[in-house]
Amino acid sequence: MAYAKMNATQLEQVLELLTEHGFGGMAEAMEILMNAAMVLERQNHLGLEYSHQRSPQRQGQANGFKPKTVKTRVGELALQIPQVRDSRFYPQALERGLRSETALNLALAEMYVQGVSTRKVAAITESLCGFDVSSSQVSEASKKMDEHLSTWRHRPLGAYPYLLLDARYEKIRYGGQVLSCAVLIAVGIDLMGKRSVLGVSVKLSEQEVHWRDFLKSLVERGLHGIKLITSDAHEGLKAALRAVFPGVPWQRCQFHLQQNAQKYVPKQSMKTAVASSIRAIFNAADRTEADRQLNLAIEKYKASAPALSEWMETSIPEGLSIFAFPEKIRKRLRTSNMLERLNKEIKRRTRVATLFPNEGSCLRLVSAILVEVSEEWETGDVYLKPENLVI
Image (cartoon, rainbow, N blue to C red; front, side):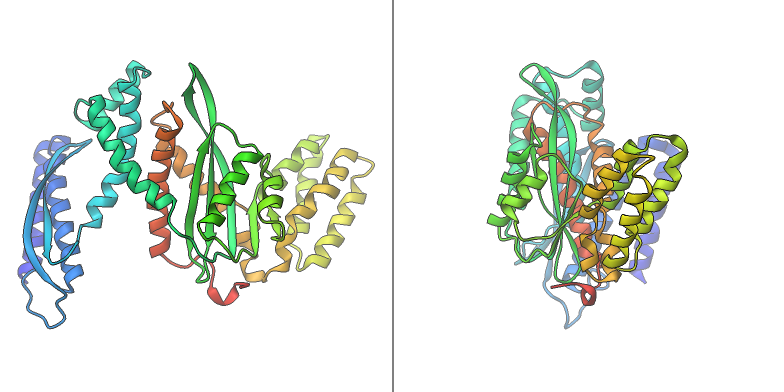
């Protein structure tokens, strides 16, 4: 009962602050909420329903609080970090809440410190960081975050029967020029049907060498047991896959195939019919029916759209590898749409920076975002039911 009253009191304090001070009361309100969340996390860690509960199931002893001042975009927060005796307990609520924000602040701060930022970026830096930054502060903070993220990027891997690959681009400053930097991402689905971000690589090229080095690094970290690889037909990727995973079936993203087909349709009036023909191929009950539908489409457009017919004959089969797998998992493995959604989340967060000062700055922010996403996936529901997997 005392626990319920405590929550009610805290809620009243937060509401009072926001009612009286509006956004001016955000920092103090966040202090109350974060401190309460960390206490709850310690209680869960100790196996308690409330702080002073006496219980044979107790898994340790609380050991007071350690003050910590955290600078955030809403101002400085005077937090009280719960301690546990004989334990390395540290509130994940605080850790996860600050990781990607710290990476974003560092990306912006680097632009400011290195003198490559515009007035707009300088204003954003001050607004987001909430305090002046110096080169020494940025260097020290960058070093600590890079160590943590590097450990994550080089962690050992295991068996992942399904691998999904994709690439996106970010703008970086290099040699006085603004260039597009390729960001390669690998996501795996493990033996229990759970998703995990396996790795990320940032370089100035998305050519075969970059893909090959990236894929080799996954293998060197222990990635094995792959039954299917899904991706779009990125330049250099197909050759890299043949070099690193020569015996693994490749599934070309059906969504992108459908989009690519429209470039070969000579008339606007034909586009709906062409899209329908391709859907009939992809939605076939089995590979035999898919091949029959493909042959019908090739013949149908030989005279009216010869370039389309030729493209279908060579490209569509690359999107039919999925028919060798159970029907119940085909829809989630026949496209790279899951990675497309992930890339949209990355874009939403990186567009604030606009232009990165170097590859390392870009890698830092993208890695921080991917760590958060991967942790959510690994603690969430399964993506594919284990009983439907081909192991």
